[in-house]
Image (tube, rainbow, N blue to C red; front, side, top):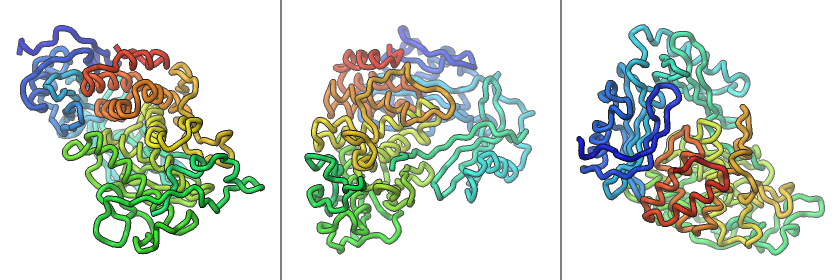
Length: 504
């Protein structure tokens, strides 16, 4: 193995186990297909990574193909049970160079001995998980438990993982319960919400008229006669049948679904099927765009049509459900699916979850989720908006009280990582402005085509617990894999200006 030993690299030290949690800043040619190359690299560097005694516990569970690289995921098992966050990922460029290794494996001496057992009945642990959520989880359902070894500080505990699901309002939690003591180790709200209030809006009425104030009645409510705001489009990718079921999107979750024979090219926003058409059209179009960037076939981000409920709740709220892998849109206030940027924002969460399941389980990862959703919406519709509105997203949804010009959020605010609110309960949408502004800087510096490719590709190096600095470094690696590093200098300047790092 001497010929594939690293000579120059950088590392990120781990916090608990005395092993590096990341090796980066190198490119090393390793022969073989990605899984074989990953195995060779890990065996050659087991001592460096501190995994010599647990190498046999690491099993490859997935090889994810992106446009610029292959990403090999290995899961650690101990006594037949998976270790929560106990994984190693090896990232291999399509040219055969390993360029990043992320190490969350727990050394053997820190793993629990035979004294650690799953002594509490799973049913009792499920009750404790539900009880810990209080009134927010009334009428919720506790899904089947999954056994996990759960690292907490420098100890590893036997635990049950539960997914707890409520339907109205839609909530999903991941809850870990100690299988010996019954203590709740962690609970995480796992639904990505946007708390904002064929003929379609593209993206919304605010962008279609010279003066947005004309969209309001004298009393300040949205007008419903919006003839100047519509655009006639073609619904593509539809499968045989009478409903809006296609190869990329399906409205199968929607109640009282519209039929294709309902003169969809004549309906207005007050028609029962308008929201369904809006959601289908814009989800289908954005997924088709992702495919055009190379994410198709074995590299496809979505392997099944994205399911949509255009009338998901009568509340002013929309979300993506990681459990159901579906998009749900609210009808409180301005109907959320009337604004295509709300639709695409939520689709952004689906993109991240498809690449990194259950993305957003730390404050920084959740903020990156909201920031990416805003960025994707802004990028997809920039060419259809006047310059003054390009950095605004979800203008129609915010038309009543969203400022002048109205927008739910902006992507050009003067925010840096220094302003990130790390306090418990901090608003992830506000923190997300730091990441969306950073991504928007990239968009303006290198253009949409390059920016979208780099930003999407970077996700294949991330995980559900990622940080902004990791996202920045992943963007540099993505540029090296896709564009031979042509934009690295510009990216470094942007991340430095926003206080995000280290990146090199």
